[in-house]
Image (tube, rainbow, N blue to C red; front, side):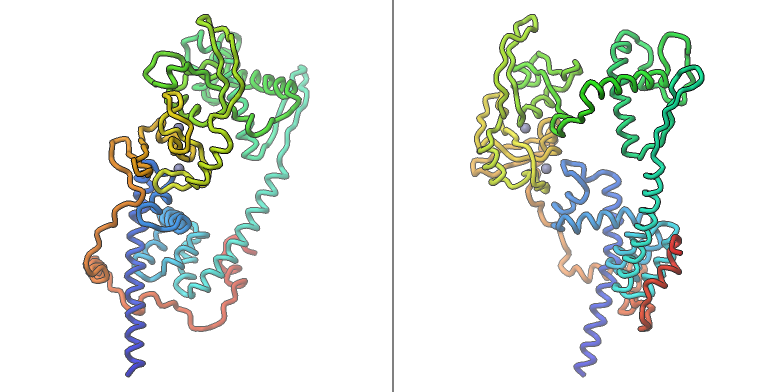
Length: 442
Ligand SMILES: [Zn+2]
Ligand SMILES: [Zn+2]
């Protein structure tokens, strides 16, 4: 009698689990759409961060949901099996780590036939084969890197090479920067199309004179790169110096973006006053006094806006970015009232914000203020209050019954045996299974 009752209890667990898997499939569909349409892009750094904030998942689990949701977008068979309650989320999660549209069918069969443990072991073996194939491919590509430099009959030097993607990107970026430097002056004088707009496919408009072609500009840019590298003793510099940005901004502009005055980068490019305010909010600064004609008459010592002891206290108090749902463990000290507007550099006027959210409050219209009780209050650009913890979602009085009713209305008939694997108890030979299933296995 008791055994019968326990069987019933077990069936109920299996049936409700199938309902939950089917509901999870629907949830992942919603997450995929929300992610693709950028619904989280309202101050959150990612869809996972938003999920974590809104539904209380830990960040790792939230990232995994988003990853699986995205993967299922191109794996319709696995998505349907989850939606029909036939495969558990755990199995789908494992299978989406390796499945591609080409291998989906075979992996779905693995999911149907095996237990969650089988699936996990096969996926692990599968990844090993993937990794070995990938490592082989990477090693092959790396070995094929080359730069040939030789002299042509007419004395010109010819270059031909193959670079690793990241090295190639570095070169392209450096060439673009050098080209920009060489030709910005020419462009300023010329109202014609900017060199950056000329695609590599465009045939040379005028080879003999006038505007140089992109290929000619690249050649000049490479020469500038070589000169610059030799001039600096081929020293890439410390990371902090490599990306140093210098902003020249007039005092009144820092205090009030509407104030007339300049806010420019070293090379003369204009930056929005809001950006200057953010960069100055937590930075080293050198105060220079200019006479009206522009000459510098006095240079103050370089000072940190926030002294080290205060910064340590700030990190200790805030622990991470204070923006709702963020919590990134490192960041910049934001002056709630900017020091240029007379805001003091004190703990109560500072809040730790990550780079992303520091930008949000300076340049994207998000607001933050400290309440009389010491708590921070964030608002969206539309003035809406952005709570630290969102209000709970409305849940029907009997959520399980509501779930069953919805699935029934969809024509889904779920029962205790919906997700039973086809496995009959025989031992699993992972190596053999991978050899048979994986397209790249020998
Ligand atoms: Zn700031
Ligand atoms: Zn943040």
